[in-house]
Length: 217
Image 1 (cartoon, helix red, strand yellow):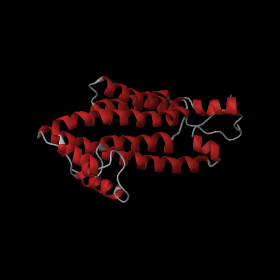
Image 2 (image 1 turned 30 degrees about the vertical axis):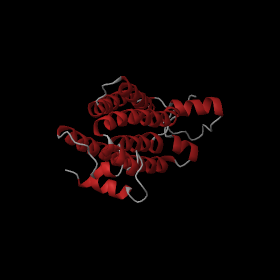
Image 3 (image 1 turned 60 degrees about the vertical axis):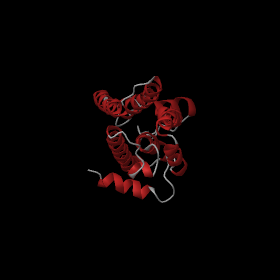
Image 4 (image 1 turned 45 degrees about the vertical axis):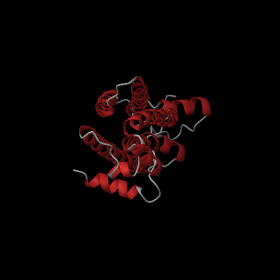
């Protein structure tokens, strides 16, 4: 593939973004156990693969051209633009939708982190606000952010393949964490677990989740 593809080759930008996002990831996920490190490592791989393709080399486009005969007449680094033939306009729409989900996810993640750490300092079980909608709002926010950036905004072979792996990894991690919390809080936590879903709010509660996040200080 010898055609020039716009929006590629900015390896310096890719490196800076990877470092900044990775710092944020490890700063707030704060992995300690091997399960936490393993789950964070999968997200790290997602981040590296995503931004290396977004700003560096569009490997997904190259593979589709090389092995699946993708039309080379109007290539773009954006998979949506290339597959759907919608050009820069399509890339812009995907970017705006993806960023909207990214920032919503980050907001949920950060608010969940604040609520959890406040409760831990007070040595109590947190069951209100975001934790009254889902049992693991930090992971919900992480999923929304990664889906927005790596599926909606800039899908690649690796981001699409890794996203369900990340969901499964954090599901298993959440189950492990819940067993420890159940040992500490007993029947109180079991009752809470029965009435509150794990990751996905009940129908009609997404707006309440977003409202709590936007009004947080």
